[in-house]
Length: 127
Image (cartoon, rainbow, N blue to C red):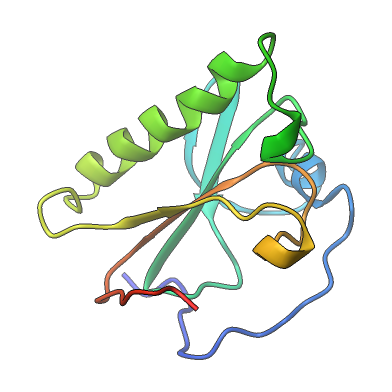
């Protein structure tokens, strides 16, 4: 399935509360997974043929803000990413998981989110 991937990422300025608006359905999204604490959807500015964001419903601004009270939901993002990859038959061929942290790490929306990228060969270093 084509989710809009075009080679060459486009820089976009995102609203501060973008993910809350997507979770509340104020903005549309192609939802992949949802439960009481996690929300996953196909990203609308993809850098790979498959580009899914997995986010906690509870806002945590950056990975640096993870603490003992919210670490379970943060760790659950990785588990859900693995489950989505298995459901989409991506596990054997491979995929990439990425957290961006703060400006130098490429974070544009300050609500932690795990990128699940697949459908093309990835290189190292990532850039």
